[in-house]
Length: 119
Image 1: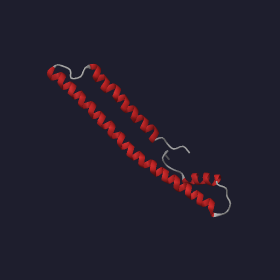
Image 2: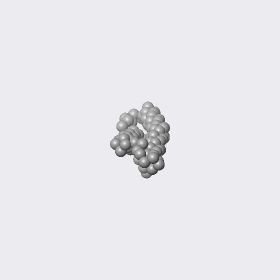
Image 3: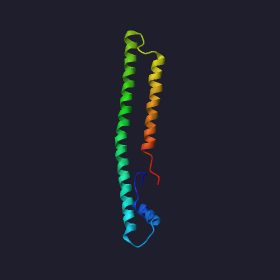
Image 4: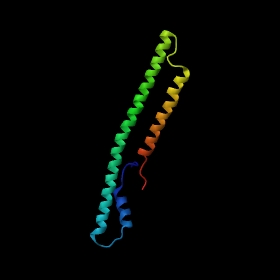
């Protein structure tokens, strides 16, 4: 069972232990409300994961395409006209610095969006 699965029996047992047993239907209503609230939260988290995972994937995809185009332009101009389109410093800044920022953003999104819920 992975981290995204939810064990309802375990949740219900914890909820029953925390709610005083008074013999009326109030305790079961509270458990039912807690279960519904938890399901609603998990559904929202799942929807956010889908939404933002797609956005981050597209950001990385288009960034890699941009870097590929820059390298092809640099190589083509260097090969045919024997001069540089970008200097070495500019090329290093584009490829190194900004790629590190994009990958850092990717890592942050993965860490906080796909972190398992610990309750």
